[in-house]
Every structure is written in C-alpha cells, then in structure tokens.
Image (cartoon, rainbow, N blue to C red; front, side, top):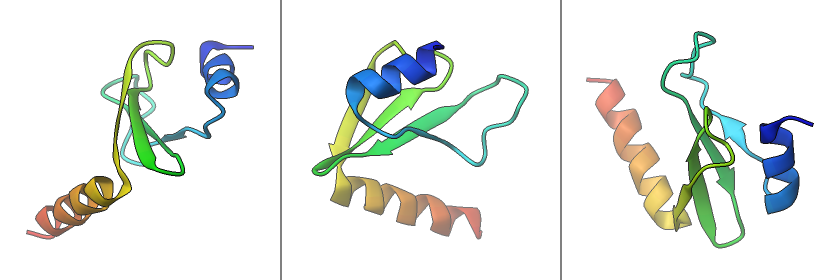
Length: 71
C-alpha cells in the first residue's frame, strides 16, 4: 500500500487529483469532499498536512477561478 492509499484509508476520504496536475510531478493539488468541509492537500506529500474550508468557501473559490480562466 502506498502513501496515497494508506492516507485515504486512514482518513476515510476519497481524494481526487486536480485535472490540471501534470504527470511530470510538478505542483499538484488533491481535494476530498467531506460532509461539512472540503479538504485540500499536496498530492506529493499525502501523509503531510492538509487544510479544510467550508463547502461554501470552496464553491466560491471554484467559481472565481473558473471566471478568471475565461478572461
């Protein structure tokens, strides 16, 4: 079992890697939706720290990021 698997099992969360993350091992973000919060971590350090934001805050961030991408 690798770190990503053991971290997922231990936390009970299903982590998803950003579709914008490349296969080169660069800057990667993973998110997991919990019942009350969205959890964010560095995909290169899955056993390392993560942080959480409210589902509303995450929706606001994604909406803002999506609108900026169209510019």
